[in-house]
Image 1 (spheres, rainbow, N blue to C red):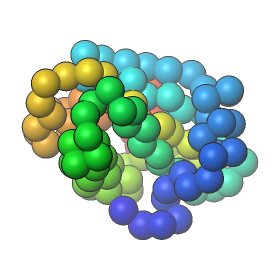
Image 2: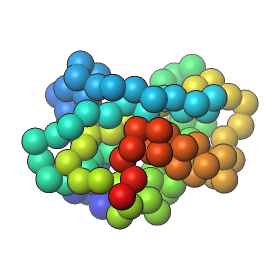
Image 3: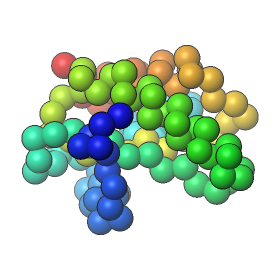
Image 4: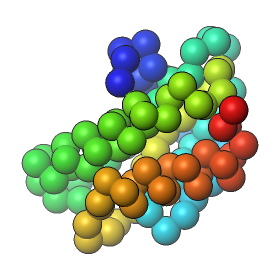
Length: 110
């Protein structure tokens, strides 16, 4: 995923947490809000309850790959954070399916 499409700083995450609307399914919670920038930015929040760093980074890498495939289809001008729910295993197909569902629920797909 390109650097321009990522939330990087703590204040960016805090802004989304404070002003966000949310949609969820059994695997993920998606927080989103309108941004003052014309580019959609996406962040991922995986807490320590998912295990050690290896497991958290694996989930994060899969989430980034799933969003990178869909970023061109997402409406511009939004900040989005994906938060996984506690689940035993995250398969890439389940992640992409959940992201499609969440983006459709929030009406962020072009």
